[in-house]
Image 1: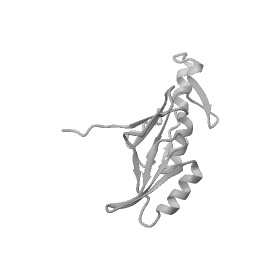
Image 2: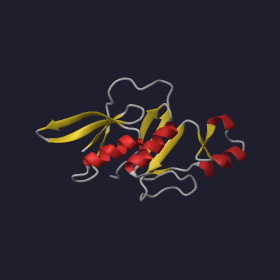
Image 3: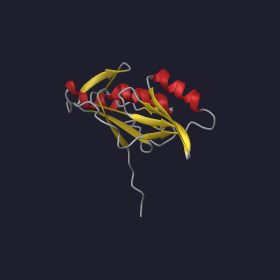
Length: 150
């Protein structure tokens, strides 16, 4: 039996801002879909209103993605073929607590520095947790999605 390939998809109000935050937070690479977007625009396959300019290049208006820098990717589309997070625009704001979240493990004795770095990127500390099983910091990304730093 072959393992199933997956990507994490996160609903967002601004997919490109979220991709920028998470690329910096995880030391991932923002995918550059501009060659594909440009080809499809030139061929008349897509309309310009489904695109925006990001980092001075064409991008999908409602989608952005980040990928692990060492994982394989499709050279024609820059889409990651391994660890990948896709951000998709949705009209409604986030409501309630996440049912799924990421835990970041920056390394031993580096949590405080990592929390400070993430705050500098736009994250907010929600609370500190200290339980018998361990301790961590609960944070929120710029759109309010919770994640933990261990």
